[in-house]
Length: 475
Ligand code: 6PG
Image (tube, rainbow, N blue to C red; front, side):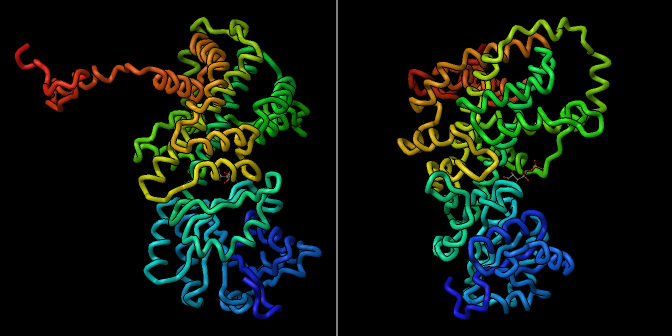
């Protein structure tokens, strides 16, 4: 990627929205000349005007043709446009202007199916294409995101210098890794987001127990999260939970949290994880519960009607919940382990199904810094996956110990939630999965009997005898 003409840019970027602008500044700050183009020209002008000293490394352009001319061949152009049809439209407009060796990199939150299709189209045309997942929000994009790459390894190698330079670092290790061909990078980002939904949902569930079950105020709750962030739960999301809980509403002077509408939106990446999990027959109940809970949260009018009808007359009351802060911390630790175990197992299944060869330990490593789900626990997860990537995380000694230690707290919290009417879908789903995983003798023999009874579906016998049907007809 050495520029043949030092005046030309080493890389290009299309789309100067929040994330695109932040990424372009990051690239310029790391010493790379970058050419930028935005559909609305005034946005480009405002961007360069606000770039300060970094403007020296930024080449603003006014048309796609100008953009292409401003970059040294073989070119690499990052697309930071909204996922879906805009990406296809941009590729269709850009590709005819490029040389066959020039590379397009989609760095948006693409659905991996779209990335697989685009990768296939690029392969058919003999042109390089990368789909990369970028996590860390605006702050991450500006100062160091976590980058999950997908596409031909030789294409990744061409831009790895830039991408590793702009990525977050965990110690000396840059958080930018090639995850596999085709849509592998965007798939890993999708599962990252599914886990992000689940982490946030579990945080919201323990917040709810503190607020409605223990009667704590937002400031006190902020203090609890702050304390937890110094222990095994140390993570970006717990850290910002403390900040969110402690923030003061400038209008009322009360807690900011208490005036935020309790209806969560979504752009859909968590939903994609749940949908893909079903296609793969991969059990990710904690993520599915988190997606469900967001959908329920959005149905506020129905929830209000529900409260009016079922109300507070099930004997549930705030002061009846007998839980300690340590119980809640233990439940969150156990829930987190269960959720990540499910997420990594799903990634493994997807990797095998699609033939990607996603390196699971590298995946845990790339999430250790820069991304939204970064946490101290991921370092231990990377170590466990390095020992044996095929083993479910709950069976790894380190995490088996954590679960032995904390599953009691999770049971206590889920039981208290059930008794007193506090919905805890993600924590409950994690516990139910854990209990299924801890029983060698399950209950699906009953399902098999029923299936055979009404549909002659057959079954296997425990003793291996070749008698695939029950005596239902005769009975
Ligand atoms: C990240 C985030 C980022 C964003 C998603 C999820 O890794 O930086 O995941 O991609 O938060 O768009 O947003 P929704 O909650 O709206 O689905």
